[in-house]
Image 1 (spheres, rainbow, N blue to C red):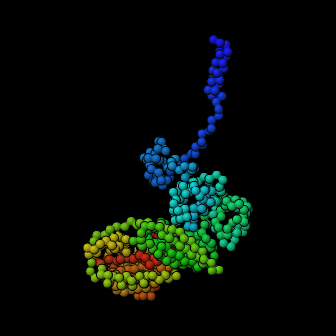
Image 2: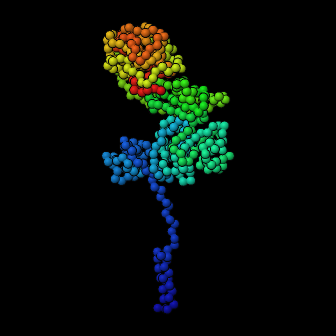
Image 3: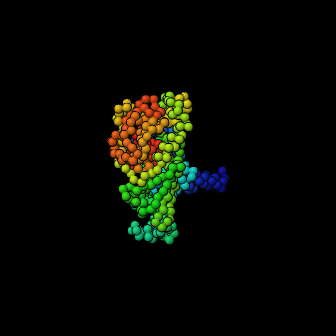
Length: 471
């Protein structure tokens, strides 16, 4: 073979060998970094079905993302990867939205991007968080944002960030940085600001409203809701829940603690109802808070059909009588006369519960039992469950011999079908005092006591008041 040709072939072979060798290979781009899927730590009472529903994934997807996990072996403290949340990592938890809280204020105090919370919760309208709404959060802050566990404060509208920093012993420039502001002069008076390192708490309410508590929660059809407003300075306060007007009253002479009690109607639709609180300060400036409150369905029975005197279900009789009673129980006396839970007004056995649907004389089930019935003959005494003033005592067609007691703050109790009434209008009664005796007057199928309770002009379950100390 020609020597020149041999040399050319040898060099070509060596070049191909070097080109194919890994040690001489051209550098390849690094694969994109993989973000670890967020995880959730199983709590007591959790099930795979509930966890999947909470995070908007299927049970199958949850099991596929967590090999070795089974519904029957789900253990408290186990860490579950949550699929489908692209770009999010860390430990997931839930937070109940507080009064006055917004997505922006929650992101600010947790050190998270607003977009992170939107993605986690599939929120369509980020401006609307209802009170006690379970919001999925990440316990680890997003890079470059404020430190978590920050205390949130909504400052007085008269003060700027410099005054706020001085009042809380903070460096104004550091405070501005923690609140994602380029400088203290960019702060808006009355805005929500966070102080890094504080406890995970919020005071996101507009000044002078310093606190707002709703209890028991959630609100339920046929139950009573207490709204407690705490003020930073004396002010006139008013409000509404849906179509119901809230009347606030001070507790024990303190103008800074105001309470409004409101019954939720038995037939109120389970839905979100707007809660509006308006506070007028001494200077005449009015600040308002509007946030939605969830009302849940109650768990009520259906009674067997009842046969009664036709006159007692005639609208020509029932409607005027209902209007008469409604007018009696609508005024709100500003003095609270009761203290602690209500006592039972009878030692008789429970005969019929509150809220059960009822049909009269073969008609439709379009009425509900508006009180609680206790058994017993005409020799069984009826006692006042709490202190109050008698505002009605007399005969009615549907309710029979009736007594109504005003306990203050818009709370009234009624006692129907009595054989004998032992009190008169204007009498002041104490808890345990005999006010009458069981009977069979009015719309009845036999002798008993019908006990009714009105709060804010709405009939509610009296038994709730025997187990809860309102306000």
